[in-house]
Every structure is written in C-alpha cells, then in structure tokens.
Length: 404
Image (cartoon, rainbow, N blue to C red):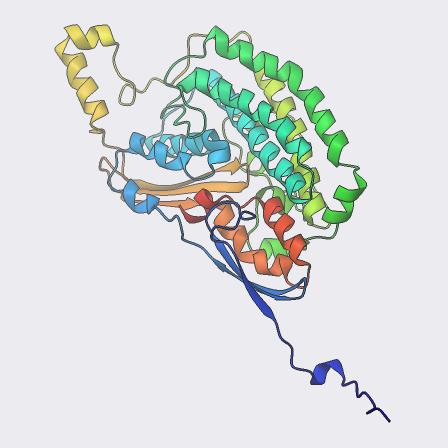
C-alpha cells in the first residue's frame, strides 16, 4: 500500500524566493540604474532601488562655473525635454537679478517648452506601448519627435542637449525657416496624435496590460511628494503652470488632466491629454505673438549678450565687454531664490544661493524623477514582474534626471 501523501499548510512550508537584478544594464531599464528584485515565481515581493550610476556632481560643478555656463548642465537632466530645463534655469537667474522679460520672449519660450513637453510625452507613451508588445506606435511617432528636434536645430543648432536660449531670452531671433517648421508641425501633428490614440487607447490587449498595474493613491502620491503627470494620474490637479505661473502662463486657458487610480493606464491617458492641451497652448501663444515687435528676442541685459561683432573688431569698449561676458566676469546680486517650472515629469526646481560672486555659492536641482522613484517598491510590490516593467515605463524615470 502506497504511503499516504501528506499536504502541509502553506504557512508551514519554507518559501524560496528568487532574487534578480533588473539593471544596471538590463534592456528593460530606462538608463543606468538598478533594481534588486525579490520575486516569487512571477510575483514581485519587493525591490530595492540603487541610484547613482551616472551621478555627475552637477551641483558641485555649478559652484565653479559662471551662471551662463550652468545651462549645458541642465540639458543633461531630462534630456527628452531639455529646453524646459534650460529655461527653468534662466528664469531662476532672472529672478535673482531682477531681469524683466519682454512679453514676446515669454511667448516664444512657451512655444518651445510645450513642444518639448509633447516630445517627452510621445517618447514615454510610445515606450509603454513597446513594453506591452506594441512596437508600431513607437516607430511611427518617433518621426514626429524628430520634427520637433528639427525646430530646435533651426533655433540653436542642437537637437537633444539643446543649450537653447540665454539668460534674458534667446541667443538669436527665430528665422522664417523656424516659423515654417512650427506651423507645419502644428498643422500635421494632430492627425498623427489621433492615429496614435486609435492604435492604443481602446486596444483591448493594451488596456488589459495597463489597467490596474502599478497603482498609487492620491494620499500616497502626495506623501512621496509626487508632482507632474504621475501625481495628476492619481487625481490631484497640481500643475506649476497654474499654481505658480511663470512665462505669463496665467494668460493662457487650458485644462489640467487628472486620473483616478494612478495606474499605468491613467498615466498614459493623462500624458496623452496633456499633449492636446500643449497644442492648444501653442496656438494661443502664436496668436499672442501677432502684433508684437518681431525684432525683440531678449531683454535689455548687456551683461549677458555679446556686442555686435563689427563693434568688437573696431571699438575697445565692445572688445572688453565681449571678453568679460565670455569669461563669466559678471557679478550677480547676493540672495536666495527658488524657482520651479512644470517639467515633463513634474516640478523641476532650482534652489540658488548667491554670495554676490560670479558663480553660484550653492545650487540644488529639484529633480522630479529622483523623488518619485523612491516609491517604485510601493508601486510594484505584490504585482506581477511584467507589470513592474511597464510601471517603470509609465512613471518615466530618466536616469540623467534621477542622478544629476
């Protein structure tokens, strides 16, 4: 007679978990960072995040650089929407120096910042599609990100890390070619965005994969200091452009999209809606630009704008001023300021302390990625491993912004 099989209660069995490294060079990670994940089969028990793989000490470097030379450092934060970083820094210095910006410069900045937001959201949402098995939307929308980069290129010569603009405005005025590219994009992009939504938004497979994955409540999101689309997807309508307006955003009419569950699907929907709102803001800005003096592209701040080249070659004063500006020999007032902009990932803030010298005494970047990445374990614990991948995509962790 065969021995009778004895089935023990689950709690009396020794659990054996698997520990895996998601990163630091795993193809599913969005940059160089690591998650040491404990999993039970396909279920995530917990994860421990490791950051700092591409820490470049930007805040320390800034203490030895003239104010205008800090701009390229900000490019390397969220490089998917670099112009927002650039302008945020310029506005911080302008706030410290008391520089008054002409309306036309503010409207031009709004146009570029909203284009940058669209480019960033395009990448994030299409990558969510890739991680759920839908490659076509990603390959389709990337050409439109390129069209935005071509607009950057016509303004400043750069595409990804833009170094666009200057303290006080822009380095040069927009050309006819730039305006033609902007208007062409505005005419053609909405049709593409509708097609993109048709491919994913009501796609049953995409919905089944995203709904309920990586959720977070409004209370938890606030306790982690979430901002941006990740907070709005949880149902909190906080947007820096509305609550602390800059660049005359108070003159624009737009909605703040919000979700309810804070899951992957809500984050996708919020970002998609924000792209439509960005298009509306750009249209309003283009209307406001009509009738303004088209020759104005920066404030009257000679300490940050080089003299005309002809004067540099022929006048000693212009040559001296040119040398002073290039060598960063411009003192700023002593003081302490904080300025934030609505980055593509949330509140991007600059806390600047000046001792009256030629370089920042202390500069701190408030990077939204660094803050909400702390909640990753909260988002994925108890869920499936495959859900952890798309959750990472949907919160849009950019390694450059995470580490700084």
